[in-house]
Length: 409
Image 1 (tube, rainbow, N blue to C red):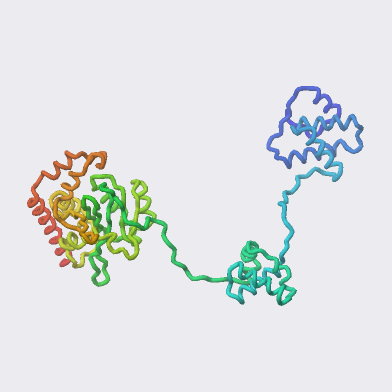
Image 2 (cartoon, rainbow, N blue to C red):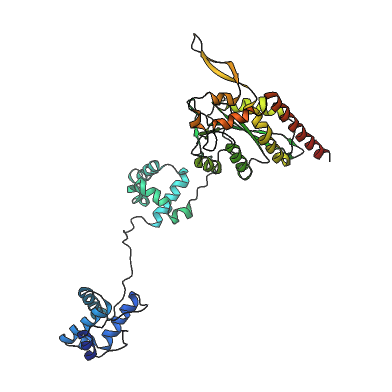
């Protein structure tokens, strides 16, 4: 049943004796209160007798759905003020103890003393009142350090005193500054970049060199630029070329690797990220030695334009990286401590990265799920070392010939 606009007391009595339900449609609390005001006003509630008032109260209870106590409060509010209204919310506020003049005076003190620390400024305010008897500081003399900082954030203070500070360098909380500790497990990479020079304002391409610390498994890539948009796809493709799961990623403090995008990629691989420590030049020594003995030895120092980065990256994937890991022996360091306690590295065993990886105990547990030991062994037996080197040199010759032909054109 819809609520009628006006009902007589007889209709109200019949309504209360029946079992009809009344519903409000689209009315909020303000609308309900307006209905209460209209109903009490139409029936001239103040002049009704006791029985009629009780009848009208029961009617409002049923129609509004409010409790008897709530309905009685609304009627009492109507009786005292002539209308039922929503009370506006007013937040509890503490009385202001310090005035705008106090904030302005604090700004003047900070301007004179170049904004000292809170306790030091508090001491000055106390001395101005207790020692020098300046009446203007009477309230500020009891100012706490915590509230002093709050007054410095007030609008009055900031309009009077604005402190400009130069940009300060911040530490980037990406990567832990320490040396990796692989504990004989493969998957801890040392990564570095090699720039192929500039020429007449033209930037050269960048080589990305990643070397596993335990097995010396090496993957090289190339990119036109070292910004995140260019570097990240190349880095993902390089990590996918390692036969084992990546556990660690160590680089220097360059922004090409110490950024949020690389951190997200390594978090996805569940790999820890570390970076070189200051005054520890050997932290990334393995990758830096491979820069000279592998990349510079085969590619040289001359300028190579960045437009050739994709061709070099393809050469690395198809020819260079398989040659490095299956057919190029490298020295395996052995740590020897002499009688004086000095540790030296001796290179008595030379082996390819595949041979180093193959002799690790529990090798199958280190490999990626899509790779087996037999598949890697088959890749290593496809060609001999010299044949693989000749094929790599042939492919490199074609690459440089193509580069020179484009340069001369």
